[in-house]
Length: 295
Image 1 (cartoon, rainbow, N blue to C red):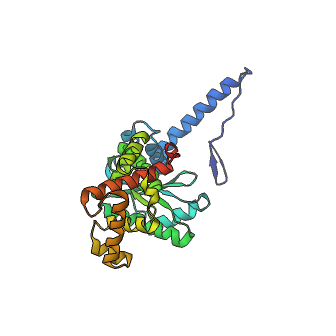
Image 2: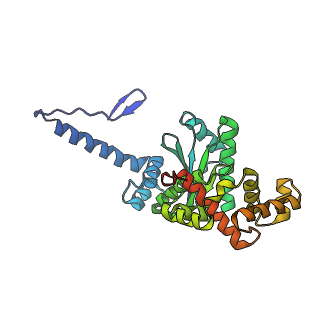
Image 3: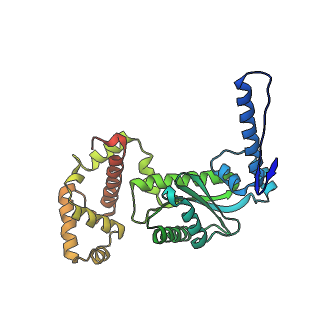
């Protein structure tokens, strides 16, 4: 190791009597592996990056060397922002989250930030959503772009952090299909949507054709579709849905009757409402899937 001013770097010179490039390649890869292992012992952020990407062994032992507790309640947030704003986004998250002792925030890909939050006890879904909302609001107001945020499951051990990370990525993928206005997707809140995406395309098509003959969803106008969606979101409460839609109760009933005449489903009944909800989710899934190009 040489020191030149404030620049501390590892420098190596290799001499070989043989003109064999394979020897140089072997040494090069060996040195790279050696440097990686060293970083796992003295760079906490790099250690956690290796953990979530499942690129590390002997996690508990290396964590102990770094003074990191193995058994802690942690949750992984994955935040996607424009690559040009990565450092600004990190600064904002550090301030608004805020990043505390035991939390870790690092860049994991071109436009992906990983935020690991340490919790004193198992956090509620509401608490996790509030943290994501603070991050989203801070980035949106400062950088004038809305990030996409995936929230993974709760992990109790370091070895489970990769599962939380994968769950956050999965939440982003599912959320992209069944998008909401806030672009915040919690893995634990996407139960039905995750179920839909796990079903083979052909079975989804068969279900859709069984529930809605000849793809009747195409015949439903946007006004009626928005009305139905809000009615379902309001737990089949006609009065509440009418207020949120700023329409008279009788107008809502008229639109639901119109839907019934088209589909044969009366969404005022729970079973029919569930069938239509599943059909709408599957229809959206098929439109965004390669296997659904024919729809």
